[in-house]
Amino acid sequence: MKRRVFLSLLAGSVALSHRAQALPVPPAPRRLRLVNAHTGETFSGIYRDAAGPIPRVLEELSIFLRDHHSGEKTEMDVGVLDFLGAVMEAAGQPSATILSAYRTPETNAMLARTTFGVAENSQHLYGRALDVHFGAQLADAMTAARAMKRGGVGWYPHSGFIHIDTGPVRSWDLDEGGLGNLLFGTQRISFDTKGELLVSGPARLIIGGGKAPLVLSGRPAPSVRQRLGRLRLLAKAEMVARRR
Image (cartoon, rainbow, N blue to C red; front, side, top):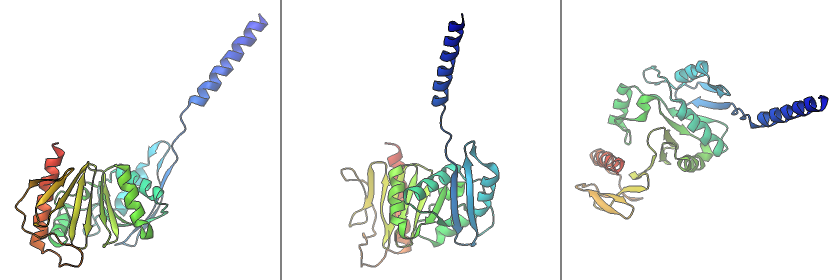
């Protein structure tokens, strides 16, 4: 009788041991260290712990990442914060400088009128995008962000920042002469020497009619009208690519 009791207790302890080993390891806390380029404010702290995003800290971040033109804030998508944290970790970057986060419709419209490359329906409007400077690790951060395929990644080497968002997976370059190319999935969208839009995968013309010449290094930059025309063509091309 005593032997049966001993064996049952032993079996129970072994089962508990296996059950304890099977318990999932709680995720490590996620921390960010940021500087706001426009306000000079800083943020340093844990925004996600083992229980998930911390509401109090997310509210603090919504203020930190507010529209600096109007002072208005919105609830930032925690996914874009996770994206930023993952990029910083992959690039070995302990801190980052935020150039743009949330934008009101009024601010975005103003920037679209005055700055080339600002989308009318930007992910910044929904708190799902960040423009970030990483110092000497900028190129490494861009490469890491694109490899993750977690959303949009824009590369602005001459302006010294990258754009990340949690919209559809896509990437684009903006060089000194204008939009160099836009990648949507496996398709590359670019301009030929006549200013006509090409989607390549092999290359084939899907939308034409452009009149702006392709600007290569050392040649004059296109006019504002030419650049806006390119943006409209890119918007059409992205819409076509989504349907495939």
